[in-house]
Length: 140
Image (tube, rainbow, N blue to C red; front, side):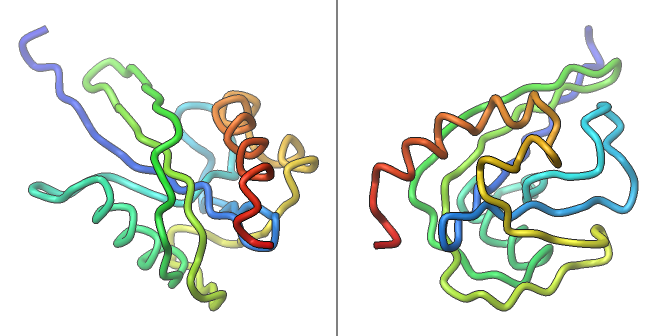
C-alpha cells in the first residue's frame, strides 16, 4: 500500500425554497452512482473544505452560498486511491444558476422526489440532514 493516494472532496446539500439542488453529469459516475449528483468537488492544495465548497459551487453553478454546517462524511475506495468526502448543508444567497461544462442540467427537487434521480447510497447519506433541515425553519 505504498502508493495509495487520498483525494478529499466536498459536496453541498443546497436547499432553496425547501428543494435540493442536483446536477446531471455529462457522463455517469465511475462509481456506478449514475448521472445525478450533489454539487461539489475536490480540494486544491492549501484550501480549506469551506473555501473549496464555496469555490466549487461558484464554478459549477454560479451560486454564492452560506454554509450552515458539515452534516455527513463518505468514502469511496478505488484500486489506486481513496476519496474521503465531507457534505455540507448550505443555502444559496442568490438564485442565478448557470451550470458549467461538467453538467448538462440542473434541478431543484423536493426530498420526496430525490430517489427518482439520486443513487440510493447518496440519498441515504443525506435524508436525515434534509429531515433535520425542515425542523430548523431557516427559510420561514
